[in-house]
Length: 502
Image 1 (tube, rainbow, N blue to C red):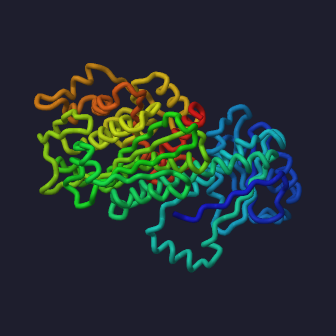
Image 2 (spheres, rainbow, N blue to C red):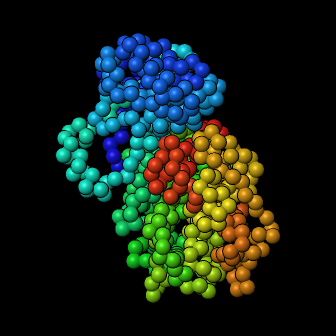
């Protein structure tokens, strides 16, 4: 991962050197300090705005190189649009857009001005910093040519940029950013995990990445195949039996709440590579299946975020880590496995493997930890991408309050979800002639029957299933992410915890 810019906050003051990024409102134009810089260079900035037709429209930009008389290397303008239409997510987007002006080794001052010196809040400034950092993320650790080019450019290209964000409420912003930076780190951890190639990140290696959270105070337990076999996790273990790499279950606990308070439960599908097993996938695009652990990545990133910001809540995060490979020992279509719950499952399609992993982990968490709710995340079905594309994650739930909270949190965090139906008619589609259920209901309503399958393993615990197949990997590029792995779910679930459960 490329070195990210360092962020600091300061009181409002016009810079005399380096790069200046100025926010420009549609109606008010340049702020007071922006006008002062403009005067120092004899109106070059306002003249450039006029010639370029730059009005401060939201997300518009203008780059002015070395304006004479200012002493600055560059002056970069970012439009912020009209007042009253800038939620926190919008300021995060502004920060992402501004990141293109931040180069390695540079010194950058951002003047967050709008209609007046105090019109940009501390929360706005923190969101801006968050967006700038997230957009700066690049997964390039395997690009040896780029490293050689950076070496040729010298030490400056190797050093991270230093970004100072000037805002009226800088002290408050500084305090808030200490909290937010832990969440941002969690998002980037999730991105790293999704972007890693499967030959580097197998089940055991992923489990060790989870174990590293112990440095933040997270308690981590790693269950081996022997441990899971004793627990009767036949559904989960069946998925990995064709792989030479051992299956793992990582359980992460953050105890920041009251000692006897029930924990919140988060469960992630961690199929580190999915060939489809005996029901093998087509070759085209199979390389993307290194990201089939996007749900587990989000849960791991969330646990980092909660621990880093010292969340006042008890949480258990569990990730089932497995590789689905074809082999002489792989499970076959027609096999019947027994889950930890005692329910039997007929394997119709070995490529419907994620729900088998989640079934045993869901049962284990509710049985051992008695959580207040369980939310699982999984890159589970292509069907959800047909329905929602890459704009929303699919939400399925047995609890209206939990579903409403998730929907609101998704809007606030700019990681939206869309609720999908559950019902008896769909549930009947996974009844089996030979076992208690089958692992797929066929092509029709594929994302719904997958959710119905999971619901059979949660009993009466409030539960939600997020199908993140369209949002966790290969997702659409945004103002704050150009990476293949998005880290979707970390900010959403952190928002949920902060708004409703702390």
